[in-house]
Length: 278
Ligand code: KIV
Image (tube, rainbow, N blue to C red; front, top):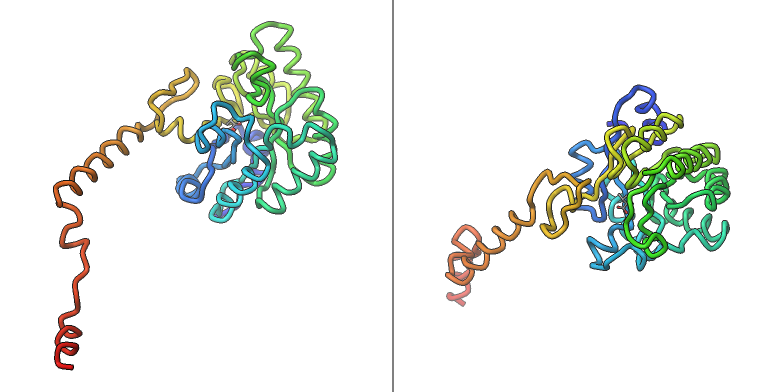
């Protein structure tokens, strides 16, 4: 089994082979996804919403990301593991970005990191890559700036904004980023970006023209029936499966049907006889 590396992603793009990425936050999911054959696991700051119950990703800390990255890397054998740097763990200064990105690799065991940004972040990405930290630059819809954007808005709709995104993509490639994550970008622009750079692009809500795709694993497995955005395809309805299983458990406990004989332990008769002789 060959470990998937940043070089594997580049080779896949060169061969026109699509890259698959899913989010993972714990060892149970990581093991299942790794064994299923997904090439990359992103320890996304989406954990703030799907694990911690916040309404956005802003409260997530670098400690949270390192903890969850450790849970994932401990069991992952083949997939590449990318840690998502949370809001304000890399924006304050290049030194802060280097220290926190280094912690994701040293303490979390991640093999690369992801940062959200535009032109303002190019110097930081260059510093991180020259320090030997593989960087994925996340452009387009950047959830960490939800308040600045005034909501989650699809990007690259106009000629001006699509030219701006292409320019950002090229700047990050030049700064040494090994990949780009394109979120919430209209399909035509995402395709143009993908054709404008040599490094692989991984899309979410950005059409089929990207070199790979990523989804939040809880969304694609249907763990939340209240969340159904256009860009998510539900490959299973696990909320319904879990609700059904838990309902059955509740009724079997109430009816004293569980635990059955096969789930129960009994006294060893030989021990009982010996004890009673004494
Ligand atoms: O945090 C996250 O899950 C992300 C998505 C784009 C996949 O960044």
